[in-house]
Image 1 (cartoon, rainbow, N blue to C red):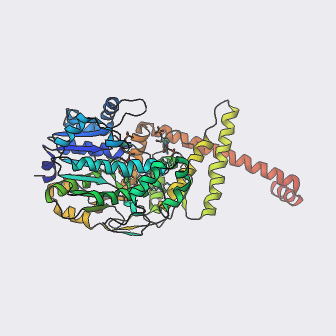
Image 2 (image 1 turned 45 degrees about the horizontal axis):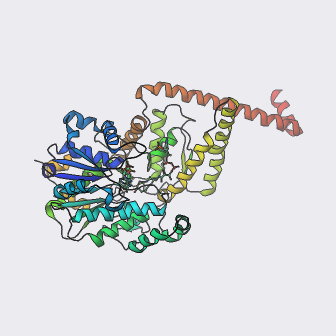
Image 3 (image 1 turned 30 degrees about the vertical axis):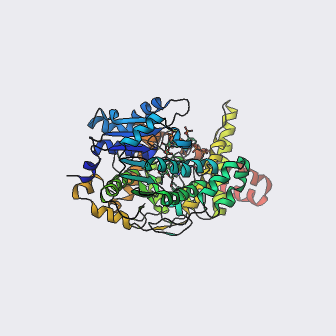
Length: 498
Ligand SMILES: CCCCCCCCCCCCCCCCCCCC(=O)SCCNC(=O)CCNC(=O)[C@H](O)C(C)(C)COP(=O)(O)OP(=O)(O)OC[C@H]1O[C@@H](n2cnc3c(N)ncnc32)[C@H](O)[C@@H]1OP(=O)(O)O
Ligand SMILES: NC(=O)C1=CN([C@@H]2O[C@H](COP(=O)(O)OP(=O)(O)OC[C@H]3O[C@@H](n4cnc5c(N)ncnc54)[C@H](OP(=O)(O)O)[C@@H]3O)[C@@H](O)[C@H]2O)C=CC1
């Protein structure tokens, strides 16, 4: 008998960030593993011209819910959307909705955040730090609250090399920063952001560090746990192997490499690629919710949800597995044959950027112009370079995260829970996982059908022939120029022909 799924049956759960990548997997697993959960409130904002209701209806059509749709066809009746905006006072929740939450909710999962590395500091602070503070204020007033689970990131303290499961001193006093951004002009905040960030690589990790500290300071009597996942990748098993719907983290890089656009990446082959499947994170999160509510640990527990210390995997291996998968299962309409390499040398990277990124993009755009179409490849390449600049901090270094609390939690689960909420990453076979991740990116991110693989292979053969023809023409042109200018080259040529 599963203790974790039994715990959630009959409970009322509140989830923020339910429309996001991890939030959807959390909602799905919760409803599938505890079909008698009483209600799942989700905080959703209207966005891009869509009302909250329209967004939720679209979300529920998503493929990720196919399995729960089959197991419990009425699962959507349990989902109760609440109009909310985390950057607004009182989360912009109506008085009526607030009353409902305060009297009913038993457990809160806080996933909402901006995960963009280039988010302006003011907005990242308003959402990741102040939003968390506001949610905490709401939670303090909940009459039946048993646990509050906050999703942070393993990189919140990336300025340290060894990261324990504790809250570290923050980069700045959050309240002073809140005051500062309140009255300072946006352009001035932008100007001083690098100074404020100090050693932190971006506003995302900086504000996640602040939010951890805020929780510790303001948790009062609440039972709180913090989950710190590393780089969250496609699912390992659930709801389907390889499920992914976000270009964040490594996914966009895989796609760009598979399409043959990305050929060179700044990364250290021997550095640990600390990736964790999304279903592992969600299983640990649900188990931590149960443990926090039922066992009520005296101190707030932080769970580093990482793989590097348990089952290490390296960027160099990732390159091999990704390239091998996309060569066997190509993406449709690739720009060039997939052939990306990692280098930690800046100059070598710059050379390949010029030769393998910019030159083909310029030629392709020229061809587009000549055929009366809009050039677009240089624009894509420039965006890719911007992304790679922001990501290289994470691909060139290794970190050591302790995982004692993850191990402790595993030891607390009974045999059935260990299967149902598996987060034992020792069982993860990296080459199989990366293959399934790349195929998942093809199917679920790009909506490509596996039946299109023969045509995609045919397209790669066409690209190879174009490359051969191009290289031969280039060689002939260079040789002709050489022959015209050098007597020695002419002599060699006559000798060879004779
Ligand atoms: C040789 C092959 C494999 C070898 C592997 C080696 C890889 C080394 C790279 C290392 C990667 C390391 C990643 C580490 C990250 C660790 C961080 C900690 C983890 C976390 O805690 S949180 C999650 C991490 N957050 C992120 O990853 C966000 C990072 N992204 C950003 O901040 C922004 O996206 C970025 C980079 C600033 C770019 O912004 P912008 O140019 O504005 O583009 P958008 O993201 O807004 O996207 C616009 C649009 O395009 C779609 N898109 C994105 N990528 C692709 C793609 N590859 N192919 C097709 N389409 C793509 C995107 O979905 C958007 O579409 P919309 O419809 O939404 O507009
Ligand atoms: N993905 C990863 O690799 C990792 C993620 N994490 C953490 O996991 C959590 C979830 O990440 P992930 O699912 O990848 O992120 P997504 O960007 O996919 O989802 C973010 C969620 O937050 C919601 N949100 C954003 N702004 C607001 C707002 N102003 N008001 C209300 N809701 C808002 C989004 O809603 P909307 O749909 O309206 O935009 C969305 O549901 C985050 O806390 C992140 O820091 C930690 C480590 C790694």
